[in-house]
Length: 347
Ligand code: SAH
Image 1 (tube, rainbow, N blue to C red):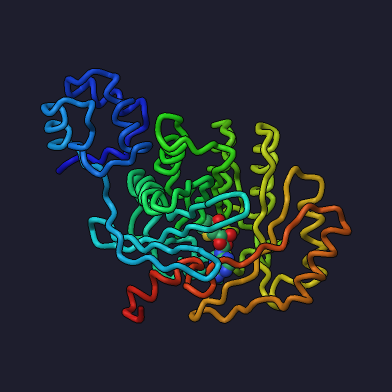
Image 2: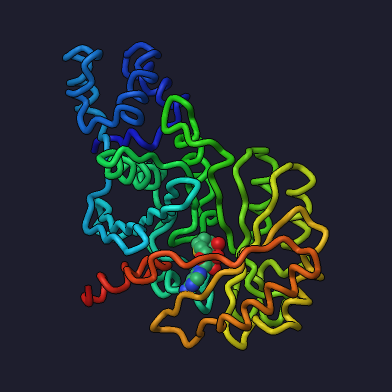
């Protein structure tokens, strides 16, 4: 079987080239052709000899996902459904912000975290995505928007899956998209979101990257958090926050907390108070997220008035926070919804 070239960091690409008897500078040439000129074939790489093109084509494969569908919503959000070589579907979303174009990538096929409100976990984890499969999501989206002369400026690892349950492949993905000879997306423009694997948060802290970290918090006390997020039983809040303080001590980046407002579950003023007590004083801000209803779950969205009350309370307590806009609600762009419909045959 051919090896997937998107699995290799720049350094690894160099090693691969040396191993097959090519000059080390081939790595840089390849990176430029693949990630910057974005060609689809080794035979388009015009400054590489025919013989080398042939050899590279025999050994390596450039792309691994096939596009199944792309939906575009009224707010210009694009949702891509890709198929892997072993016939799994994965979703990738492109969001249009005033600051640029942000791609939300999937990190696993299914998810084992079992958060009670989330559509992704309805399909259990089948396997981790390979680095190349995560890289290819961004590259294919970039190729699609090349037609409109747009450039991916930000990446969020917030699609299906728990990125820290696929730690090594995700970190390698970050290296590849970040490398200046490859996609060159600044580390500060990349965000990894985790439901709170404290051991991996410490490991991530030790890497000392500029990559942003977001924590899916969603509840301000252990009882509630454990009831909606099983991961809290393995890493309760005290342990999670110990790892976050460790991260903040080692990194200068501001943390993000994600907090979905779930009607009558976590959206009262008492919850807001507990949340402010928990997060106050940290170099962090809270992203309040409107819930995107999932057919299979009974949670519903907090009404606007209650959301504003919650937000105002946090502001009064001088907690930095934002009330996030919804993107792509009209095209099932939220969290595993399209994939579930396709797999159930209703789309
Ligand atoms: N496993 C990682 C990343 C994927 S989920 C994590 O938990 O952070 C990305 C974000 O979407 C998380 O904050 C998750 O809690 C949130 N989310 C899941 N289902 C949602 C829904 N139906 N509506 C709004 N946000 C949701």
